[in-house]
Image (cartoon, rainbow, N blue to C red; front, side, top):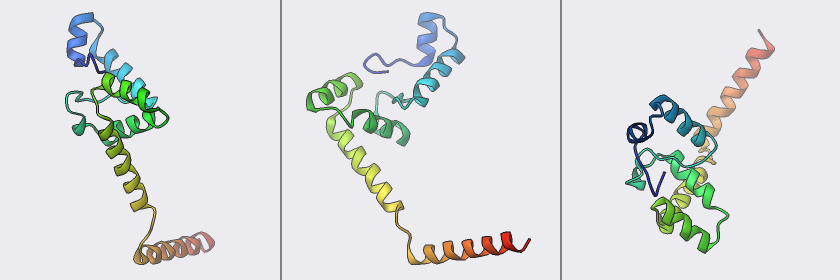
Length: 119
């Protein structure tokens, strides 16, 4: 994790903790919704999951706390705002069905009802 981001291999060499254990710990941390990027040196290459985790972690922070968070993680507030906008745009874009998609959904539901009522 930033600011001391090191590879798992490096931590293994420094501490002697096995790599599988370190990967397990990282995955447990990640599953709790914490951002644990694979490439701490370039946040723009982080996975969408890691970027979303950062957006969620920072959602309730005031400006001062956000600045401190960014310093610790090696990020810029502008990056986080952009990631938030992209996440919202993606969510809004998938929330609406086109007319063809609605018709297809209705047709599928009708077929499913027919199959379940006439086995």
